[in-house]
Image (cartoon, rainbow over all chains, first blue to last red; front, top):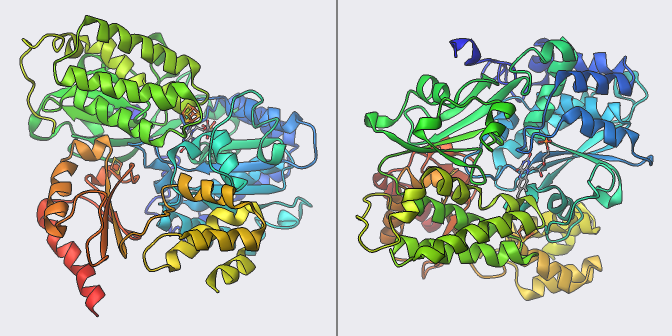
Amino acid sequence: MSDQYLSKNMLTRRFGVINPESIEEYINDGGYSALKKALSLKGSEIIEEIKRSGLKGRGGAAFPTGLKMEAVNLAEGSSKYIICNADEGEPGNFKDRYLMENDPHQIIEGIVICAYASKINHGYFFIRGEYIKATKIVEHALDQARAEGYLGDNILDSGFNFDIEVYKGAGAYVCGEEFSLLATLEGRAGRAAYKPPFPTICGLYNKPTQINNVETFCNIPHILQMGGAAFSKIGTPSSTGTKLICLSGNIRQPGLYEVELGTSVKDIIEKLGMGVPRNRKIKMVQLGGASGPVIPESMLAIKLDNQDMQKHNLSFGSGAVIVMDDRIDVLDILKRIIKFFHHESCGKCTPCREGLLQILILLDRFIDETANESDLQLLEILIETISLTSICGLGQAAPTAVKSVLEYFREEFTDRIHTTASALKGGS
Amino acid sequence: MKIKEILDKNGRTPDKLISSLLEYQKTTLCNYLTEDDLREFAKETGIPLSRISSVASFYSLLSTESRGRYIIQVCYDVPCYVNNSVNIVKELEKNLGIKMGQTTEDETFSLEFSSCLGCCDKAPVMQIGETLYGNLTSEKIASILDKYRGEKDE
Ligand SMILES: Cc1cc2nc3c(=O)[nH]c(=O)nc-3n(C[C@H](O)[C@H](O)[C@H](O)COP(=O)(O)O)c2cc1C
Ligand code: SF4
Ligand code: FES
């Protein structure tokens, strides 16, 4: 893959260039002109452009954004809601924080355009409680947008009324899940619920609700500006546009990068992250965050492309790339990941609440080298059961890392079935 | 009282409950909500006490147990872990003379694990109150803690 894919600046172009606290600087840079354009179009025309762009949600599940907008647009009822999901809590992710702290108006512009397209009058900006600086910047940006007529009654004399309220989370990873987020907004404990019905039909206060990730909304003004067809030429046919990458772990230059979709994981690690410190070997890379798969070094040529990834039953999720070098003990990492999910489980359904605990017990047996052959089978059954029968995405995705280690690093388990296996060093 | 004031400002509907609880908790000395507090919230808002209790115990930023004036949260997750967060934890425990999950005797510091703080590019990371500290090394811990100790004596 040539370098043309690397370092595409679209969503991050204004980072460090404009003052995020100044709406004037955003406007002087062409900001809010996509909204002006949108206000001259019909809602259905806007949605057509988004559909044409091929944009898929950046919150992890890669659902086509245009289809989601269409569902909300067609849903019955005059009272609808739109929510920006800024509850970023997936370990390894920090892109939404950067977007809020560096270019808040880009997000707001995207939300207003979507709200206008479906005649939505109420919006929420749901921000993770721990993100104090980001919250202040967003609140300030909303005030400015209101003062300048981009929010509030009769936006830019279009007759359209819309406002956005900030809602601060209170510390619970599961609240990034849609129904759990809605429960929190309604002032209840954030427990998840079965889908369907989806929030697009039955969301906040049982009204049609559009929920999108921060990065997804940031793409909207760009699509309006360049047109859906032009946007769809960025990236690959199955994955259009750019992607923010949160690079962390054992890496020389960790940080936030924006790449054109289609870039390989290897290029991200070597050309942007400058490889692993002290030229150590890469043991494994986790994609997407704690709920994503762990792949070995031999697979790093894989591209950030839904089709390419799906061939291997993988996905790049919300765009985290966590690099781990050869000092790291794989099972030790798995234990930490499962502990995270067990701690964050809302406790509503048994497979997730109890099953994850059982995985922890089994992992300990392998770590202590007291496991036997049937423990391996048990582990595989547990993984299958938890991912198939949990109510929400948290439980469904929690065993992904363990599952991928069983596939790509099986010897890490089989070597420890008998006490003869040589002890692995490092990690803790 | 404080609770009344906050509710007068924020409103008494259920959707304002969590932010009001958070706001009130900040004003308490030991960073937690007592049973009496929860009762007063119930009385003021008309929301059942059981529901308020379930909210207060569900979210990690709300506490129903007494904590120190400064809460030190050390990130537990993998990007920080592979950057030796374990050493940071050891240094904090040594310096404060307490274990993770405990509060110092003088009620100045509580030491807790936290899930990813969204600063993995600066791993290992901890947060004290509202301030984030990244790219930590064991050597940096003593001077950071001393700042808070100094503040307390003033
Ligand atoms: C446990 C869990 C946590 C999630 N956390 C987030 C989050 O922090 N931010 C986010 O945008 N989506 C998160 N999601 C995905 C959302 O539920 C939802 O799919 C997404 O916000 C939709 O937006 P998109 O289509 O723009 O990606 C989470 C899902 C689950 C199951
Ligand atoms: S899968 Fe886990 S987090 Fe989701 S509803 Fe069930 S217990 Fe709650
Ligand atoms: S893993 Fe520690 S801040 Fe993200």
